[in-house]
Amino acid sequence: MLCQGDTLRTGPGWSPAGPCNNLLGASFLFSKTTNTDRVVLKPTVTEPLRSITVCLQSYTDLIQRDSLFKLENKNVFPFHLYQVSDIYYIKMDRDQVSYRTSRESMELRLICVSWESSTGVIHFVVNGKLFPRKVLKPGFSIVPGFTAVLGHNLAVSDAGFGVGGPSYVGEITNVHMWDQALHPSEMQSMYFNNCCNCSGNVINWESVDYVIQGGILLYKPSMKP
Image 1: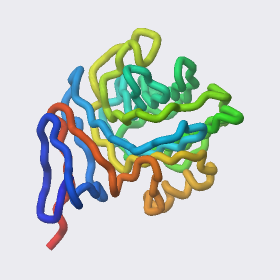
Image 2 (image 1 turned 30 degrees about the vertical axis):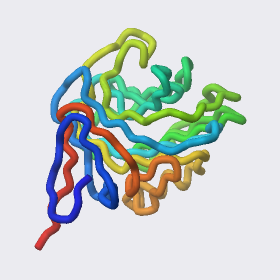
Image 3 (image 1 turned 90 degrees about the horizontal axis):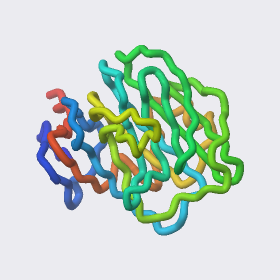
């Protein structure tokens, strides 16, 4: 990560150590299309997950076929958030739902998804706007042992309908994950409070182990004098 006085670091397999794993104010910059670049986050989960919430901020001027966040466990993807043109897809195991949004790309988007196994209800919030509830994979659970992957290419096996393509190009920051389905009002308040109350207990941007694979930059603006 970036400690005081640093501006950026990069390199295949580079990861933080010791007290310098606080990513507060930092962004991962995906600057070019590739088939391999990605960031891997390593949460510590010992019990199956029957409810989750994932929030992240993305910023791009090139919306294409973008994998934003997915959970991966031995080449199985129990959860996947990705975008094709102006449609976001949320996939659990082999089932998915979709949401059509504005194609406006020149804005920082705070995207939140919550899901609970007991009902299968999905809540989807973009920049404080709550979209209609949908139902996905009731009774499903996510087994432990997964990693979270940011910005990887959208492979055919991920999407399930043959839309393989290059990796995401843009910024990803403020990634958080919880082992519970947050109330929609909580996800909306994160946007209006500029994510000041984000603090995931499965993935926390302020304390997370990660590995950069490929030419992705980890950038934090220098403090003003």
